[in-house]
Length: 68
Image (cartoon, rainbow, N blue to C red):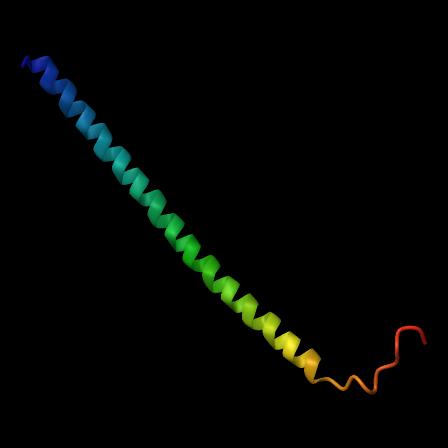
């Protein structure tokens, strides 16, 4: 192999290493965002459940029908 070919291969390898590190950073950031969104969804689910429970515990007998 010629020296130019080795230089070309080393250059390609360096670019691939840089791209791999950049992609790893993107994936790591996405995973952090996914975890944040999952926590937010769980908090919202709990909030909706608690609101639903509060509404079902209310006295429906004291409410006036909507046509009054």
